[in-house]
Length: 349
Image (cartoon, rainbow, N blue to C red; front, side):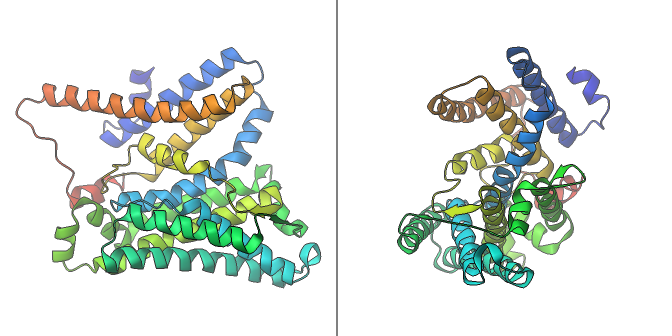
């Protein structure tokens, strides 16, 4: 099957990666289809289409920091705070009876809050030299405590129908949140493949010192990376609020590990400098298929969580073995990270 699918694409590394992920996806669908007669049904795929965007948007928020060689552990609580800002503005403007003007103001305020949180995190990392893991961990703790203090651990609910339609409605039969996710995927691909900032992100992840000496303002680039990550967190927060018709601190907390897993499964270099949006999207679909399949089989939630970690460990071992196989096949060769110019050409494929 792999040979047949490979023949449909050019013989490039990018095509091989996509074909490999597609083969895994088809194999999983066949496996779960054979184990449950309810898997290959319209209801299952409709459920996947509504659930995928939340995880997908948070993964996009994690994707760019990893590309730069960093990490953003505060994505879920950034999304929660943006969702709370949305809820507070709507409640102030009339709650379930709020008009269109209030809804637009609430969405803009939520997006702005996400950008401010991301910008603050990026500025701390860029100007103090703090490690992204420690800085984002501190930001995560701060946002969690702040959110629980302001809400007293409760939730805010009661949104206008227009907000609910954003997370639960359809457009021409396509789930609205899936359309939002597709637009965001397009924006990320455009940013990384067609803009100077995108090129700078790849360079920064590939070699920070060389990037600095090449004249690129690395502090500004780092700040923009986390501001963009915060923006995507805000979009995820809005979608989560509209889907559940309520906002609560801690919503989507379990997604944090899975976003890292999706990036890693999508062959994003954990040390930065290499990764493609298309591969990450395919990895997301694979993980969502696994989640839905396990749910249909009635798997215990704790066992499912253990499986996520097991998959991550298995991918690490498989990649190590694959890299050793490649190094044995090419005697005398040394594995090096692709140069920025090569990356810029490769990511346009």
